[in-house]
Image 1 (tube, rainbow, N blue to C red):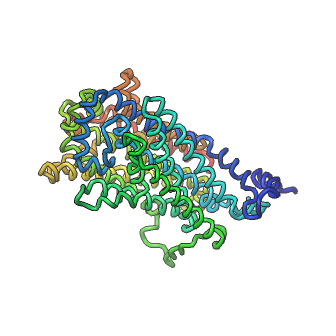
Image 2: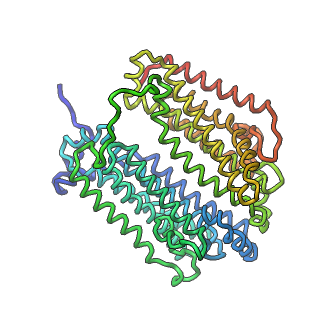
Image 3: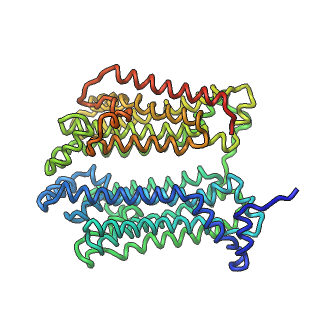
Length: 556
């Protein structure tokens, strides 16, 4: 029997003479990485570009006069909650407003993109056993790390290049657009180096992502505290954050001299330091091992791990805790911004109209808070989808078969992850409502009543979130090969309908596709039991179909 080497390994044989032994096969592995990311990578680049371009276009239309923009600068720049979320305003032009509103968040998404790319092609492939197979051929020890770095760097450069073109095409100054685009792309480079180090420290892909996300979360908090502190506070903290460097470049500072081009050297220095450290660490550790020691487990299993439900919760509790922490501080800051939302939107009737459409009512504060709860529902649906798709991950990783070989049946196994998804979605909505209520209530002087009111408003979105999770369950059972792409596509369509459907004046039958169209808009709206009941029945029906199909089909 002849065993043929994998394509990546065979390609590595052809290039071994062109590189040193440590980098042999880098070209082939880089091509393979681009081929594997041929859908994910363009999707990330497109998402970031559209986020920035949409905000620039929106500001040019909603605030077309200098007077309207000046009023927004006065109200928005003086709101600590908005500075916490978006950063500091460095001008009143359309470009300056765009950089304020989306600069930090575009940089954050660019950082997420590079973290996923680097860890997928390094620690992720090690954990899955792919690098051990490829490394048995003529492939250098540092080839996989180099391929992952090249892929992430290329993605960041592509984001910066597209943003330069798109922002200039929208009429923004070319030099300022270049600085802004480079600042966002350079943030991706910084976290490329950070992710490379994290991949050497942890012994698994999930741990490596946790380290990188922890650094990203700390960077956001340092920037947020520095921006919201004011002149008398620790505003210097913004300089310690890669996300803060985006606004500190002052991309739309007015003149070439007003822009801080030299700040772009800081993320490049982080990239260089991270890459150097990653190469040094990779040379010292064994394949498949991390430099941080694994915490030894207990000699015997806890009584809480006697069933699949407790095991599913144990596997997903870290992810849920991370989601809850992110939801808490984002919605606390967003809720605090509700205190002055009327003044903030007073200069733009068009923006007021968009909020009242999304919030489903005319009172601007209630409309804003209701819109926040819709976003919380969409976020909970995203978590529930990822929790359900853990079923498919267990299958493809070969972890489901040993569990199902015991007395655990397929329905019980599937229900365990569905139950975690339901519980997690409810927890996230409660956290979002509590955080938003406290953020608004502490500024309005009625924290307790507002917190109770917002928790109820958030929980009203739970049935709609569970419908999305139910669709994911159905796809796992009926179309296992396409369930991941299908589930996220469904969520993406629902997000598009809820955020832009009313503004684009889509027909009612298209709007009705989203379950959130039928959820009550609270606080301030009316509540009817019938839509909530139908949403719950739809979620149960989708889940039942998926679990029935899971019981009959082949595993894996």
